Length: 108
Image (cartoon, rainbow, N blue to C red):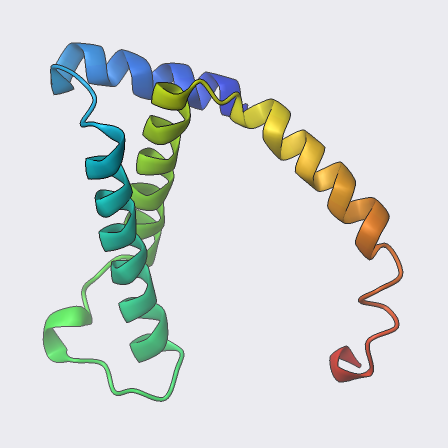
């Protein structure tokens, strides 16, 4: 799915089911909460903390999708075309980092 299509899909969902977008500050707080849930799963499942029994059934994919949903909401309500922004960022990173990581001894 192209990011523009994803943004439109979220916008249509908000209009059909969500009444309206939460304001930008509320969505920013929502994004922080969702990223925290991803961090909790990662730190306990893949890091050194032990995973609580109540967290073992948490779906990392669902939590990442929650993050993506809120990012798409924020992009929509602030007028950001994420496809254009992502393409531009990928081009910048490609030019900047083309040899950088290959030369990093820590990654060998």
